[in-house]
Length: 283
View 1 (cartoon, rainbow, N blue to C red):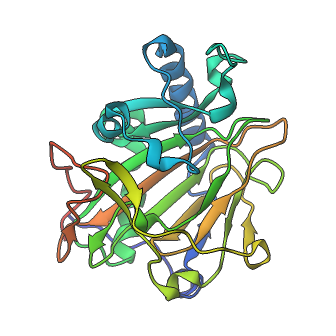
View 2: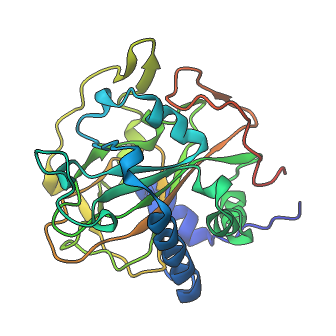
Protein backbone atom coordinates (compact mmCIF):
# COMPACT_ATOMS: atom_id res chain seq x y z
CA UNK A 1 0.00 0.00 0.00
CA UNK A 2 1.46 3.36 -1.02
CA UNK A 3 1.14 5.19 2.30
CA UNK A 4 3.08 8.46 2.59
CA UNK A 5 3.78 10.08 5.96
CA UNK A 6 1.96 13.33 6.73
CA UNK A 7 3.97 14.66 9.69
CA UNK A 8 6.55 17.41 9.23
CA UNK A 9 10.04 17.25 10.74
CA UNK A 10 8.98 19.92 13.25
CA UNK A 11 6.00 17.82 14.33
CA UNK A 12 8.12 14.69 14.67
CA UNK A 13 10.76 16.58 16.67
CA UNK A 14 8.06 17.96 18.96
CA UNK A 15 6.52 14.51 19.42
CA UNK A 16 9.86 12.94 20.35
CA UNK A 17 10.71 15.85 22.65
CA UNK A 18 7.39 16.36 24.47
CA UNK A 19 5.72 12.97 24.02
CA UNK A 20 2.68 14.43 22.27
CA UNK A 21 1.61 16.77 19.51
CA UNK A 22 -1.63 18.56 18.64
CA UNK A 23 -2.79 18.46 15.02
CA UNK A 24 -5.41 21.15 14.63
CA UNK A 25 -8.32 20.56 12.23
CA UNK A 26 -7.31 16.92 11.74
CA UNK A 27 -10.99 16.09 11.33
CA UNK A 28 -13.34 18.30 9.35
CA UNK A 29 -16.49 19.76 10.88
CA UNK A 30 -18.46 17.27 8.78
CA UNK A 31 -16.45 14.31 10.11
CA UNK A 32 -16.89 15.48 13.70
CA UNK A 33 -20.62 15.87 13.18
CA UNK A 34 -20.94 12.44 11.56
CA UNK A 35 -19.18 10.73 14.48
CA UNK A 36 -21.32 12.54 17.04
CA UNK A 37 -24.55 11.83 15.17
CA UNK A 38 -23.63 8.18 14.82
CA UNK A 39 -22.98 7.85 18.55
CA UNK A 40 -26.31 9.56 19.26
CA UNK A 41 -27.96 6.89 17.10
CA UNK A 42 -26.10 4.06 18.87
CA UNK A 43 -27.11 5.45 22.26
CA UNK A 44 -30.74 5.69 21.25
CA UNK A 45 -30.66 2.01 20.31
CA UNK A 46 -28.94 0.95 23.54
CA UNK A 47 -31.18 -0.70 26.15
CA UNK A 48 -29.44 -0.01 29.46
CA UNK A 49 -31.60 -2.50 31.33
CA UNK A 50 -29.44 -5.22 29.76
CA UNK A 51 -26.33 -4.05 31.59
CA UNK A 52 -25.24 -1.61 34.24
CA UNK A 53 -21.50 -1.89 33.85
CA UNK A 54 -19.72 1.04 35.46
CA UNK A 55 -16.33 2.29 34.31
CA UNK A 56 -13.87 3.86 36.71
CA UNK A 57 -10.16 4.42 36.23
CA UNK A 58 -9.83 4.65 40.01
CA UNK A 59 -11.14 1.12 40.55
CA UNK A 60 -10.04 -0.82 37.50
CA UNK A 61 -9.17 -3.89 39.56
CA UNK A 62 -12.91 -4.44 39.96
CA UNK A 63 -13.41 -4.66 36.21
CA UNK A 64 -13.24 -8.42 35.98
CA UNK A 65 -16.67 -9.10 34.53
CA UNK A 66 -17.13 -10.75 31.16
CA UNK A 67 -18.90 -7.67 29.81
CA UNK A 68 -15.67 -5.70 30.16
CA UNK A 69 -13.46 -8.43 28.67
CA UNK A 70 -15.79 -9.12 25.75
CA UNK A 71 -15.98 -5.40 24.91
CA UNK A 72 -12.58 -5.80 23.22
CA UNK A 73 -14.41 -7.12 20.18
CA UNK A 74 -17.79 -5.45 20.67
CA UNK A 75 -19.50 -2.08 21.01
CA UNK A 76 -20.20 -1.93 24.74
CA UNK A 77 -21.57 0.82 26.98
CA UNK A 78 -20.13 1.83 30.36
CA UNK A 79 -21.82 4.15 32.85
CA UNK A 80 -20.33 6.88 35.01
CA UNK A 81 -19.83 5.99 38.68
CA UNK A 82 -22.14 8.82 39.75
CA UNK A 83 -24.89 8.00 37.25
CA UNK A 84 -27.10 5.90 39.55
CA UNK A 85 -29.34 6.54 42.53
CA UNK A 86 -29.03 4.24 45.55
CA UNK A 87 -32.02 2.28 44.29
CA UNK A 88 -30.18 1.53 41.03
CA UNK A 89 -32.14 3.90 38.82
CA UNK A 90 -30.40 6.48 36.67
CA UNK A 91 -30.31 10.02 38.04
CA UNK A 92 -30.70 11.48 34.56
CA UNK A 93 -31.26 10.30 30.96
CA UNK A 94 -28.96 7.55 29.72
CA UNK A 95 -27.34 9.83 27.12
CA UNK A 96 -26.07 11.97 30.02
CA UNK A 97 -25.04 8.98 32.13
CA UNK A 98 -22.64 7.04 29.90
CA UNK A 99 -18.89 7.30 30.61
CA UNK A 100 -17.71 5.68 27.40
CA UNK A 101 -18.46 3.25 24.60
CA UNK A 102 -15.79 0.73 23.60
CA UNK A 103 -13.72 -1.02 22.55
CA UNK A 104 -14.29 -2.06 18.92
CA UNK A 105 -16.17 0.84 17.36
CA UNK A 106 -13.38 1.10 14.81
CA UNK A 107 -14.05 -2.45 13.68
CA UNK A 108 -17.79 -2.94 13.95
CA UNK A 109 -19.48 0.37 13.24
CA UNK A 110 -19.18 1.58 9.64
CA UNK A 111 -18.99 5.31 10.43
CA UNK A 112 -16.28 4.94 13.06
CA UNK A 113 -14.50 2.33 10.94
CA UNK A 114 -14.36 4.70 7.98
CA UNK A 115 -12.67 7.45 9.99
CA UNK A 116 -10.38 5.09 11.93
CA UNK A 117 -9.03 3.46 8.79
CA UNK A 118 -8.76 6.69 6.80
CA UNK A 119 -5.71 7.54 4.74
CA UNK A 120 -4.75 10.39 7.08
CA UNK A 121 -4.66 8.03 10.07
CA UNK A 122 -2.54 5.57 8.10
CA UNK A 123 -0.22 8.38 6.95
CA UNK A 124 0.27 9.50 10.52
CA UNK A 125 1.53 6.08 11.57
CA UNK A 126 3.67 5.81 8.48
CA UNK A 127 5.37 9.02 9.66
CA UNK A 128 5.96 7.44 13.07
CA UNK A 129 7.66 4.43 11.47
CA UNK A 130 5.00 1.77 11.98
CA UNK A 131 5.36 -1.21 9.65
CA UNK A 132 2.17 -3.22 10.21
CA UNK A 133 0.00 -1.27 12.65
CA UNK A 134 -3.33 -2.41 14.07
CA UNK A 135 -5.97 -0.51 16.01
CA UNK A 136 -6.19 -2.52 19.21
CA UNK A 137 -9.00 -0.54 20.82
CA UNK A 138 -11.28 2.45 20.31
CA UNK A 139 -13.39 4.48 22.72
CA UNK A 140 -16.00 7.19 22.50
CA UNK A 141 -15.59 9.22 25.70
CA UNK A 142 -18.37 11.53 26.86
CA UNK A 143 -16.94 13.37 29.90
CA UNK A 144 -20.47 14.19 30.98
CA UNK A 145 -21.35 17.59 32.44
CA UNK A 146 -21.26 17.57 36.23
CA UNK A 147 -20.46 13.85 36.60
CA UNK A 148 -17.71 13.24 34.03
CA UNK A 149 -15.21 11.23 36.04
CA UNK A 150 -11.51 11.83 36.57
CA UNK A 151 -9.05 9.80 34.53
CA UNK A 152 -6.05 9.35 36.79
CA UNK A 153 -2.44 9.81 35.60
CA UNK A 154 -1.45 6.86 33.43
CA UNK A 155 0.58 5.62 30.46
CA UNK A 156 -1.13 3.84 27.56
CA UNK A 157 1.67 1.27 27.32
CA UNK A 158 0.61 0.00 30.76
CA UNK A 159 -2.62 -1.37 29.31
CA UNK A 160 -1.58 -2.29 25.77
CA UNK A 161 1.91 -3.70 26.14
CA UNK A 162 4.08 -5.02 23.35
CA UNK A 163 7.72 -6.07 23.49
CA UNK A 164 9.27 -3.73 22.48
CA UNK A 165 6.67 -1.12 23.38
CA UNK A 166 4.77 0.37 20.42
CA UNK A 167 1.48 1.83 21.64
CA UNK A 168 0.48 5.30 20.42
CA UNK A 169 -2.80 6.95 21.35
CA UNK A 170 -4.94 9.20 19.19
CA UNK A 171 -7.40 11.48 20.97
CA UNK A 172 -9.80 13.33 18.69
CA UNK A 173 -11.74 16.21 20.23
CA UNK A 174 -15.37 16.10 19.13
CA UNK A 175 -16.13 19.17 21.22
CA UNK A 176 -13.88 21.98 22.40
CA UNK A 177 -11.81 20.69 25.34
CA UNK A 178 -10.83 23.22 28.03
CA UNK A 179 -9.63 23.25 31.62
CA UNK A 180 -13.25 23.88 32.57
CA UNK A 181 -14.82 20.78 31.02
CA UNK A 182 -12.03 18.24 31.55
CA UNK A 183 -9.36 18.56 28.86
CA UNK A 184 -6.27 16.36 28.77
CA UNK A 185 -3.27 17.25 30.93
CA UNK A 186 0.24 15.84 30.37
CA UNK A 187 3.76 16.01 31.78
CA UNK A 188 5.86 17.05 28.76
CA UNK A 189 8.87 14.81 28.24
CA UNK A 190 7.71 12.23 30.80
CA UNK A 191 7.76 9.53 28.11
CA UNK A 192 11.56 9.61 28.27
CA UNK A 193 11.50 8.08 31.76
CA UNK A 194 10.07 4.78 30.54
CA UNK A 195 7.15 2.64 31.61
CA UNK A 196 6.20 2.86 35.28
CA UNK A 197 3.87 -0.13 35.68
CA UNK A 198 1.70 -2.62 33.82
CA UNK A 199 -1.98 -3.53 33.94
CA UNK A 200 -2.08 -7.33 33.89
CA UNK A 201 -4.87 -9.85 33.40
CA UNK A 202 -4.51 -12.97 35.47
CA UNK A 203 -6.68 -15.84 36.67
CA UNK A 204 -8.34 -13.63 39.29
CA UNK A 205 -8.99 -10.62 37.13
CA UNK A 206 -6.99 -7.52 36.27
CA UNK A 207 -4.51 -5.68 38.45
CA UNK A 208 -1.53 -3.34 38.29
CA UNK A 209 1.82 -4.97 38.99
CA UNK A 210 2.84 -2.11 41.29
CA UNK A 211 1.35 1.03 42.88
CA UNK A 212 1.17 4.28 40.99
CA UNK A 213 3.82 6.89 41.76
CA UNK A 214 2.62 10.18 43.22
CA UNK A 215 2.44 13.02 40.71
CA UNK A 216 2.45 16.76 41.32
CA UNK A 217 -0.30 18.63 39.46
CA UNK A 218 2.07 21.53 38.85
CA UNK A 219 4.14 19.30 36.54
CA UNK A 220 1.17 18.84 34.18
CA UNK A 221 0.25 21.24 31.40
CA UNK A 222 -3.30 21.49 30.00
CA UNK A 223 -3.90 20.48 26.39
CA UNK A 224 -6.81 22.72 25.43
CA UNK A 225 -8.00 22.05 21.88
CA UNK A 226 -10.82 22.89 19.50
CA UNK A 227 -13.22 20.28 18.13
CA UNK A 228 -11.57 18.46 15.23
CA UNK A 229 -8.09 18.65 16.75
CA UNK A 230 -6.14 15.43 17.23
CA UNK A 231 -3.75 14.82 20.13
CA UNK A 232 -1.12 12.18 19.31
CA UNK A 233 0.13 10.58 22.53
CA UNK A 234 3.33 8.56 23.06
CA UNK A 235 2.64 5.29 24.89
CA UNK A 236 4.87 6.24 27.82
CA UNK A 237 3.56 9.81 28.27
CA UNK A 238 2.06 10.49 31.71
CA UNK A 239 -1.35 12.08 31.08
CA UNK A 240 -4.69 12.49 32.79
CA UNK A 241 -7.95 14.43 32.77
CA UNK A 242 -9.78 15.93 35.72
CA UNK A 243 -13.46 15.69 36.60
CA UNK A 244 -15.84 17.67 34.48
CA UNK A 245 -17.65 19.86 36.98
CA UNK A 246 -18.95 22.22 34.30
CA UNK A 247 -22.31 22.29 32.53
CA UNK A 248 -20.70 21.36 29.19
CA UNK A 249 -19.79 17.87 27.96
CA UNK A 250 -16.41 17.06 26.38
CA UNK A 251 -16.91 14.33 23.80
CA UNK A 252 -13.82 12.69 22.29
CA UNK A 253 -12.96 9.66 20.16
CA UNK A 254 -9.87 7.71 21.15
CA UNK A 255 -7.85 5.11 19.27
CA UNK A 256 -4.87 3.07 20.40
CA UNK A 257 -2.52 1.58 17.85
CA UNK A 258 0.30 -0.93 18.22
CA UNK A 259 2.66 -2.39 15.66
CA UNK A 260 2.67 -6.10 14.86
CA UNK A 261 5.94 -6.33 12.97
CA UNK A 262 9.14 -6.68 14.98
CA UNK A 263 7.27 -6.84 18.29
CA UNK A 264 5.12 -9.23 20.32
CA UNK A 265 1.71 -8.63 21.93
CA UNK A 266 1.89 -9.52 25.64
CA UNK A 267 -0.34 -12.48 26.47
CA UNK A 268 -1.18 -11.03 29.90
CA UNK A 269 -2.72 -7.83 28.49
CA UNK A 270 -6.38 -7.36 29.38
CA UNK A 271 -7.33 -7.69 25.71
CA UNK A 272 -7.31 -11.31 24.56
CA UNK A 273 -8.79 -11.27 21.08
CA UNK A 274 -10.40 -14.29 19.45
CA UNK A 275 -9.92 -12.82 15.96
CA UNK A 276 -6.73 -11.06 14.92
CA UNK A 277 -7.27 -7.42 13.87
CA UNK A 278 -6.70 -6.41 10.27
CA UNK A 279 -3.64 -4.15 9.87
CA UNK A 280 -4.16 -0.55 8.77
CA UNK A 281 -1.49 -1.24 6.15
CA UNK A 282 1.63 -3.31 5.59
CA UNK A 283 4.79 -1.51 4.51
